[in-house]
Image (cartoon, rainbow over all chains, first blue to last red; front, side, top):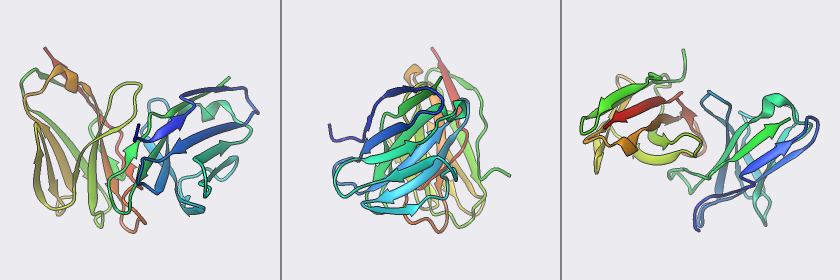
Length: 112
Length: 114
């Protein structure tokens, strides 16, 4: 499968736990973006990364959220001390340089 | 004013009709525009991209862009029940490092009735 791969597809965490969401870009893409879609709301940009670099994190909440895209392995979106308001669908997208972005299947995070 | 605005709908059309979806944006310097389709519980799927004023056709889909009016639209000809979904307008804001950073509208829900 040459598409954007996200895992897990569904993740349940208790309040206060950590959530780690993983994303492998489409083959040939080196640019990764994370988006969040809250229930009944639109998609919101969170962060844009290239290998070992955060390019634009203007949409990231100031606390508890972090992202990385290491030299080897997938991009990781990490949410510390999750709260109920973090329950959402988190989508990863990838692109080449100035090409269209394609989305993965998403991770549905539920905080109980 | 929202950066990208769409009528949330639902827009209901009969099978075989033309569905017209509209979007306005506030950033006059935006250069890249996209339409994504999202089925309920699924991920956004890219349908069309458009970068220049005018029309761009791909099968049953036509995207139209008018930068002077800050308006982009999507026409779906011969609408099918399988086209029933939420259609997301997305704009790459001016000054973005890459085209993957997108501002999305709230989406228009399209219902195609058999």
